[in-house]
Image (cartoon, rainbow, N blue to C red; front, side):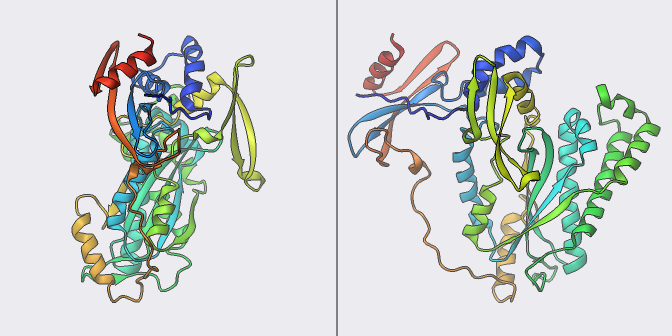
Length: 408
């Protein structure tokens, strides 16, 4: 049996963490949960988490692939999870135009969000969705469907919390009919949406402060007092809050493709990484300079600074960053989607996409044999590792192979 590591030649976040995490820990203390995440990411596809043995039915040769960490912050592990999630969403897509909205947290609130991520990210999701749902009720007397996706990063890896919302072009009325915009260019007036979003968010923030659910440390410490916090709220209310509509998309396959750009993305993808300089102790990666016509440029940071910025984007434990609202809400989606489809059957707002050939390939079809590039692979065993223990699951031949790979 021949062997192949299955490792991609590209530079990965895991490799950067292996090199620079010890140096970062020498200089900075980390919360236990954050350290656990970074160590898990550093082990991704290294062999420390075990392997799976695949046999190619085309060339009759076998190879092993190291296990991924499966962490939601890992760029190497999110692609397959994204495909599975998107296929599941196909069952709830409606034959209408979808509109893309983006809600951005003002820069003045970002330090407070870093100290209270669960509270402020939840408030961002709730305020944006409540705003869109209220506009749906006021304009169409209907309940919209919303999928909201939280992102916390900018292209330079700095903290930039914002929300992507994909919104149905209209909604289901109390009479179980479909109502929506008569034109396809826009859903709601942007400035009016921004003003309502600002009001809802500031009201929620004031309630969090009044009920003592916020923490204040370092530069946020002066905001702890009621008078100081009230002055801070007046300051952020006087600013222009950034909300914009990015256009619309139609057709199930187009909607899925559009969602795929945003759903399971992480702070930085491996393909943006360019180089590690062990002498200078730096990391280089590409970024889009939106101030310069989105031109592609290269940024170089010290390895320690790269990890510091990456840590901004670790989500609170069990925090759900993709949420559904309105008629797509998880507790009522199945029933409401069926009613919406019935309402759209004879509606002029229905969009009837051209018939598309659906792929019947299994989700594992992206796995290729490293010897012949074949796609008919069969799993013949696994090696699981937990601490210093190794567990063999599969045929005796698998045990012999792993023993040779380990040099034991």
